Image 1 (cartoon, rainbow, N blue to C red):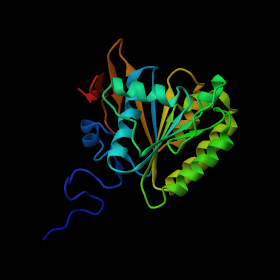
Image 2 (cartoon, rainbow, N blue to C red; image 1 turned 180 degrees about the vertical axis):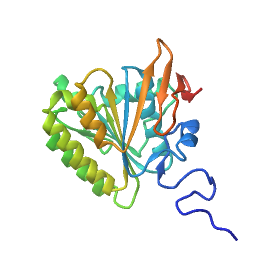
Image 3 (cartoon, helix red, strand yellow; image 1 turned 30 degrees about the vertical axis):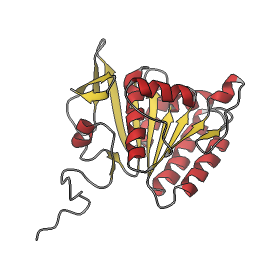
Image 4 (tube, rainbow, N blue to C red; image 1 turned 90 degrees about the vertical axis):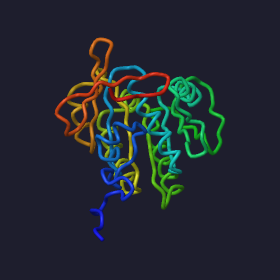
Length: 239
């Protein structure tokens, strides 16, 4: 009996095991299973539902598989993120999904602390966030982790360049050692090119959403042409 190649899922031979499902079926097929696991993944794109949709569907896919999902909220409150996800058919209110809330404190209010909601005193509090991520790593020992930065751009705006690059290097290394796939959303056109280039070099994979005047295309690693994408009440689809 012939055995499948090492690292290949026997049930789905074209899907590799060292991957984390994106939550988008067509994209998983293109990527032979999803995002790299472990790995640091960057999604760069304009402000809008297209970019956040990738985060929502990735988080839900991980939760459905019983993986520990840590959603780092820096642009919106956890409740706002949950509500926006519902609008595109995604349920983020699940026991496997924990929110590290770096946003609510910037409004002068406090997050109701629970197992699902951990309060961080703002995007500039990188040490506090690092400690919370370390706790998440301990909590997830022996399990796959998914970590989402929504968005990394907020941390870039609130911290010196050297600090954010060191943070990505150190925390990224720890998370990869813990078998995590980390998705980092970045706002296109917001950051200086040299800094953005440095961040890109820290990543294992880079996906870019291009606005084509109302329609959108996704630039995918190792695929020579961009592919049209669409977001609707049922989530993101590859056209």
